[in-house]
Amino acid sequence: MLCAIPALAGQNPDAVGTGAPQTNQQLSNQPQSEQKTALRISGRIVDQTGVAVVGARIALAGEDPSQSQEVLTGDDGLFTLVNAAPGPFHLTITAAGFAAQEFSGNLSSTENFVVPQIVVTVASVTTEVRVVPPSQFEIAREQIKEEEKQRALGIIPNFYVTYIPDAAPLVAKQKFELAWKSMVDPVTFGLTGAIAVCSRRKMISAGTGRARKDTVGAMGLPTATWLQAR
Image (tube, rainbow, N blue to C red; front, side, top):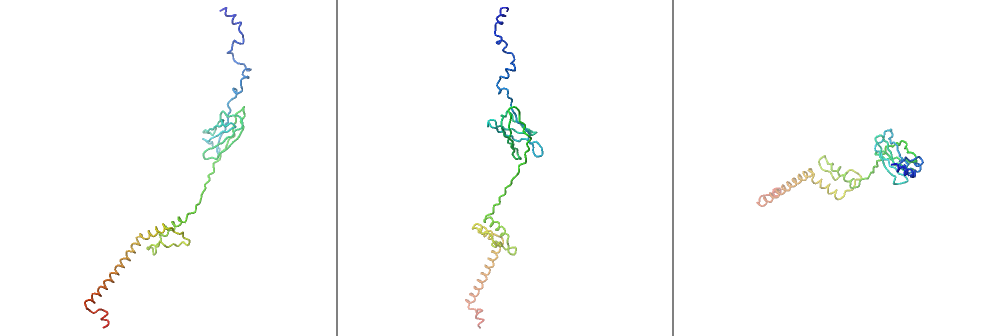
């Protein structure tokens, strides 16, 4: 043990105690990148009544595209963008039902940036109404619907008459459909049947009278003409 003491005494003092704390001078010689703290951009989003907007999307864009990031506001409308790069930046605020807002600023390399309270407004709703005039076919179709309700004396179908001065022309298909509806109408069936029965009876009556006259002449009996001459 005693022999080892002189050997220690002969060593370089700078080599001993390498685990001692570093001085302020040594800390100042470290690279500035190791001393730089993370920069933040924070703020609050509210609506026109001052109520916090929850879930608003905050998009950060800077000079370096790789530093772009997005966050959502919390229940209190607050947001914080961490590890932001110093320099000019641009914020885009979007929220459902609200118009988009934008904010630009310049982030210092020594302190965080607090964005003034941003008020978003309700998005305006634009309704576009396009009026397309109906075609001649559609106009004629609507006019036919009215014509199908027309009945002379309240009974007889009167589908082929229109009281519109500038009625739309009918195409072949519409004419056929109108004629078919007129033919299958129950009143048309009834009238056609009644006319047919009357014509049949008239023909039968005329045929029976002629047959009787021919029979009387054939039997040699005096006919009505001969009796009149007499």
